Image (cartoon, rainbow, N blue to C red; front, side):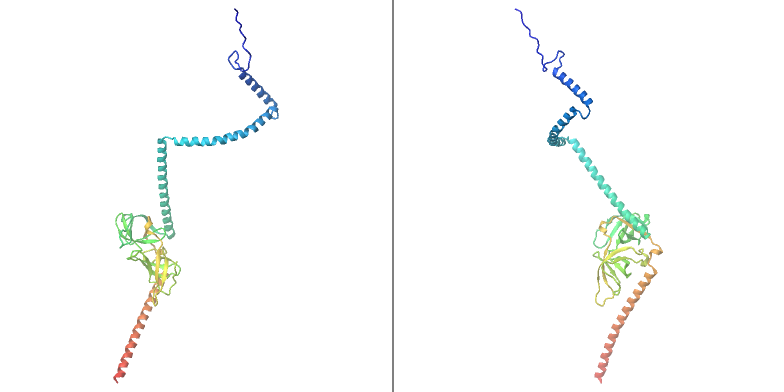
Length: 335
């Protein structure tokens, strides 16, 4: 019995004899035709208009899709960071610590550079012959106020040389070794500095005390002194250069009948935070007390001496008159 064979049906969904789907071939041909037609018709053709419409319709969809994908992308980054291996995190921690150490070191260098710059400015401003030194220790007892610096006789330092910071006078070298020296501070009770009030030129002696406070003594009560006045070195005695800042007047009192003021002074330099100082190795004639300041100091001493002598004379005369009166009374009664 003869069998019937039906021919394969022709359909776009079926494969061609070469094995390539006919739908793919058709779409490829259509795409080529549309490309050629679009290239020939220019920007004002029908195909370009249809494409613009499709872009306008699809644009909101793209925006919504991008918005929806953002959290997913962020979560992916977070997950990636959380899943970083421990070795990478350890490296980052080490790098962070190294950067912190470098920042601290650079900050210290900057602070030292600023301090040295200020000392250099002070030296240039007052034309000081000096050498810089570093503070390496402070006195640990309550009987003395001293600091120790890292330079001594081998660096040209000697006993008696004045020492200043970038803000004001701090003391005088009291002991000196080959490589270190001890500086007695102006707040020490055995310290004394010839000073004057900058505004009125009133002469006095700045002395320390056991409690670390400063007093300006021997300033006559007829001189002009007020709270806030700046105290500077006078240059008398040739120890400290004239004009260096020392402190500020904080209180001025005058007792009844007293010849001198009682003046409290706040030092300009805070020794507790002091790191670098300037040791003045020599002073010239221009840095000593002027003739006018010396004459003023002498006149002040003479005025004080005269006042003291007059007071003593008045006291003596009063006693003598009293004695004479008693004798006369005695004589009268005897008669």
